[in-house]
Image 1 (cartoon, helix red, strand yellow):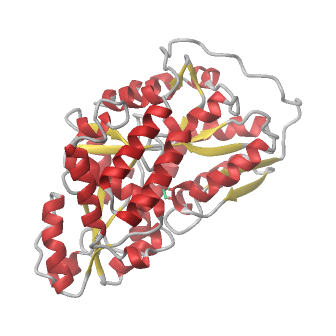
Image 2: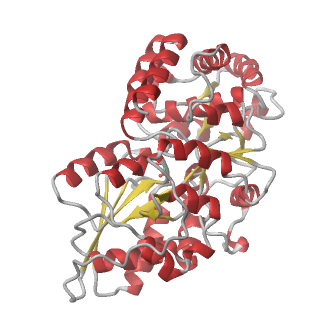
Image 3: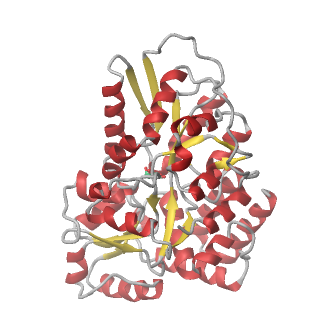
Length: 426
Ligand code: GAL
């Protein structure tokens, strides 16, 4: 697996990454010795397409802990934009849940630095997880020789979802393989009365941005945006940003949907052709809407990204001061186990972070990421919108700059703002 480039980029965003051959700390104190009877898990998995996998895992946890009262403290809003604000308030107030969701990579770093999460290195040793998680994933999540979260999955960001009937109606035989080709198709689709591309709230615009940059710049230059080796102000990057603005001008930005699911609805209804979204969308199409893969909905890599896997991973933590620490540890054991991952992922629309998935469970769309993730020829890059390559203040600065950029279309100004933010946050 070629995760090395991602690791290199992300590790620059992280304070420091060490070898992971250290035994780690023994479990910290804090247990009362009495078994807890309550457990609270905090996530942003609520709506259709997001909640089903979580529910399956919570159900399995409930089955294994029949006397435990489980609180599913989910805050609605794709990609966790609302949930993360609520979580920050709770953590600052010393009111942590027992376990919470965070993306692996730069997003977790501020929590580690602020001492908000416990070191789980001992759990990796106890469970033998160093042998079942890919070494590159272990390197990515190791900070100063310690590991602070349990990755439950691998999601893919660079996907173009579409309605085959809408394409056929407009006389389009295949989805575009470059953004140039998308722009040509957009004219055809508009002439046929269809919306070429749908879009939702700010984070979906950021999701689109990362994949336009990736498609236009390629894997290496894209990764360089996050480690300082690609100049944001270079003509290539500014041109790619211009492409983003042009692509967006063929979307329903003026009537942007409130979240990722309603952004997909016009495609299902036959009013729109394409949407760029991660593979949680598969659960929305297939499970929530009951549509047939390939005939009623289709998917391919987003334009210009064939052979590239833009990844992200959801992970669970053990907050310092978790009120029911013993159950939180049991929850993490389950999330990191083969049974837990093979229960959660086929329903969630992701593949396990572990290397020993049962391939028979990953069919239809899910066969593709499982094959690609394990293909040494595939180039791996980390997602911007989902916490791998940028976190903390850098990420917040990108969000504000992007809001202005989407409104103004001023690529040069956005490039300068992000470059400045990158330098300021080093
Ligand atoms: C991502 C998350 C996915 C999915 C998606 C939409 O950030 O990693 O698991 O939930 O947001 O909400």
